[in-house]
Image (cartoon, rainbow, N blue to C red):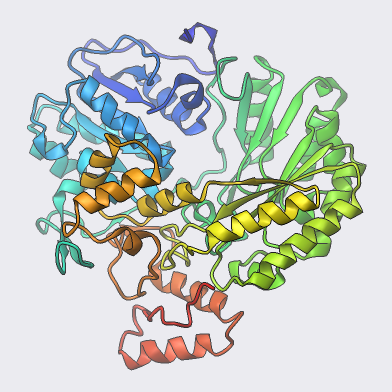
Length: 566
């Protein structure tokens, strides 16, 4: 069985005070998955270096010695379907699943991470507290605030904590609906002392994250992870990783990246460079030169997805010489029109040249990521993707070409949050599989059914909490969710409302009371720009609609039939 003895710590835990806060910090998955999460590592290290906190780790397969009466139970939540394990852990600790059934003898259950920061509402019933945004300052703010009311009753604790920026207490907000299965009518705090809007917290420093522990038991064995950039300047219209984490931030080469890498290389020879757009770091070439020094010739370097026009032959050679065999590029589509709609600023020629550079630099594989079901996509756009891939294969014989493809899923706080999942995407995945198979191109599609479940949770409101509990006993298949919807008919909207329907831009969204990096008016402006690619009159007509409705201040318009997904 996996244990903690294989861990090499890169920080110094401190001894806890006699009166330290007993805290359980859980990751709702196996140890090898959880310990690979850089976010989990960082928050755990933050707790472990505070003498006023006595932290114990908990995974689904192993755990440290747990306190008998924990005051706080935290979850790092990175993958939507892990909610099942969160509920299992609550039950195993004899904690009621619903927050409103807990009393002063139960710990406060808090959570953070990308799933909850994006849209916590489907899970609102299960958490007392949700931490929105970057943890660098927020975790300390949370613990310091908790200490102020540590000996108060549960209600007093929650009301006080709700006044701290970035701390969201779902039970202090009332959601009203037009009908039990209708749209949201309003979201209001229960009284005037509770903030009407909770704003995601953004860390603005230039020293980004790096691993606090290295272990051979991690999913990425013995890897030391260094965050090179945070967010992405490209701002593809569907991309949560870009829009939710704005602004684009880069780690200082001298004060952050080089010291972190040197520290990591003391315990391992495997370095992972992380970020949504690593190669767009302004000093990326200098970073490569640093890693290419002869003293690091035995170091294995892995890199996250590469921006197409930055995949030079030099970069490919350095990666190849540092034991990397493959590189990943997100291209989205072979259609120029679709790329313009999603704001993917690249040309087919750049993609082909990137593949040529990869081979010339010594890489053996290249994986391209694409997507089907993007708004305004038509059959000819799919054909253009097939032609592009065929051209790449002919241009770089001997280079293994893989095409991974997902279905478009709407994400909160992005310009495409108002779109639904296109049902025809399932057929288009099968069509691509058939056609690319004929041409000898390896195709790796993501499950369409998983995309439907992901969209359900992505756009869900807190009425889904009952459905998630019900589905938990049925299994994690799409059929299980459909079965639960049938049982709850009349108590919440149907599956199509959450997943496939296009929403009106003036309707209240489940996360309307949770402020992301950009205001809704800006997201709508980006949406207008995207749609004007295929319909030049759209921008003008949608602006006129907003003006005629007297809603210029909030820049709200309708998603009309012009928002077709064919």
